[in-house]
Every structure is written in structure tokens, then in C-alpha cells.
Length: 324
Image (tube, rainbow, N blue to C red):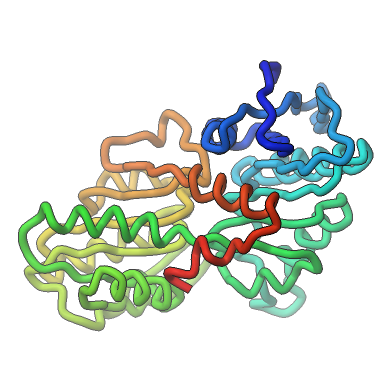
């Protein structure tokens, strides 16, 4: 990328290729533009990065979601951090709106890797001083890093959206956790809006395959809001929506922070009982995923405020204390 750069109060914002629209929004929210940086691949598939300006002693932030293609985007981020470190950048913060490999955070079976820990080690080896991310699949992943980690929350944005939306829709609402793992997030969401909580108890026979077992709570005749941290193949959320429909739910809405939306996700969502799916822009949606049912909200201001706080050595926790 080549552009005229406006410095943001001693901060330089760099972006990889995974989610450049979000990076541009963050930079503009801070009152500047992205720093000059070119990232790509050689003909043999190796990644390369060219930093186009002086960074000596500068507070640098590299924005890159490690979404699909995960390994290419991860390597691009690591190489950018290494390039900045070798150019004597003052402090390097890896801004990772969506942290790939987060679901591989424990040994589920014998001889399984803990890939989330390995990736955390790679960031330290590359030369990062700090990590800024949002809605890790498991908050304990913060402990995998031996550097400061600022863990932002997407729930407040979704709460604000639905607080306004339920005023426009007739009938009672209930928040539904689509699985046991999302209960804590859903409970916080329900408490903020002050509506009841229901839980779906399901069995997962194998990876990316879910089977709804039972619904704990009353959803008959009510409008449903399903809350999760990410939607990958959409099997869980669509099966949950079908269960809500069969239990007599009136209207069905869903939301999540990270729209991974891989494989058959879009087709499933299109055919599902979900009326609207609200997602955040931690992952850039390709044109084939921008369907009428999906509404995307931007997290640019959240990250811009966090970057400003980090640069000024101010508290970041005040930005997300609301739902801690």
C-alpha cells in the first residue's frame, strides 16, 4: 500500500492484508492514516513485508486478524513484527481483532498439540511487546503470553444494538445460549438488557457437527436472541435456531463477535430460522458472505480507544469494565 501518511500523535499504524478496511477505519478514528507498508507473497508462496518509512523509537501498532487463510495471515503478521523490531521500533503492539488457533487451547485427546500456546510463543519470538485482541475463545489464553495482553470485549456493542432493537419490536425477549460454553457470555448479555436466559444443552459427536438435545428455559411465544463468541460452520447456531422454532419461538435473532463463516455456513444461515445475524468486523467478509440476513457492526472505535490508551500509558480496562 502506498499513501500520504498523517502521523497520529507519535503512533504509526500498520496493516496486513487480512482486514485492511478495519485497519483504515481504526487509523481514521485516531485522526490519521495507515503507515506505508507493503505485504505480499513471492512466487513460491513465501510472505514478504516492506516497511516504507522510518520507525526508530516510534510506538507501532500492527493490525492483522489471523483469519482465513490463517497461516498466511499469521506469517505475514510475524514477519511485519520482525521487520519493525529490526528497524528499531520503540514498542510493537500486535493488534489481533480475531486470534486464530484460539480453539486449540487444551489437550482434548492424547497427543494433541496446544496450538494457541505455540502461536503465543511465536509472537514473543518475533519481537512483539504487547498484544491487543478481542473475545478470545477462552480468556485463559491470556496466560499463554509472557507479555501484556489487552483483551477487549465485543458484548457491549451487541448489547447496545439489541437494547435499541427490542424497543422497536413487540413481545417478550429471551437470550439463549446456543451451548454450555457460551452461558457466561449469554448471562452477562441477558443481565445487561434485563431479560431472561435460556440454555441449549447439546451433544457434539465430532468436530463441526452438533446435535441439539434439550432447551432449558421458556421460549414459547417469545423473541429469541442467541449469543456466541464466533460462528464457524454455523451448525450449532442453525440447529439451535431450529430448536427454538420447534419450541414455539416467535422471532429468532442471533449475534456473535467473530464471523468465521467457513464451509457451508452461509447456505445454512440463509436456510435457517434466523431472521437476522449481527456480527462485528473483526473478520472481513468477502462479497459472497454479505447476504441480507447478516448485519455487520464496526469495532474500529473500540480498538482506536484502546490504542490511544496504550500509547498514553493509560488504563485499558476502563474501556471494557462494563461486562467483566
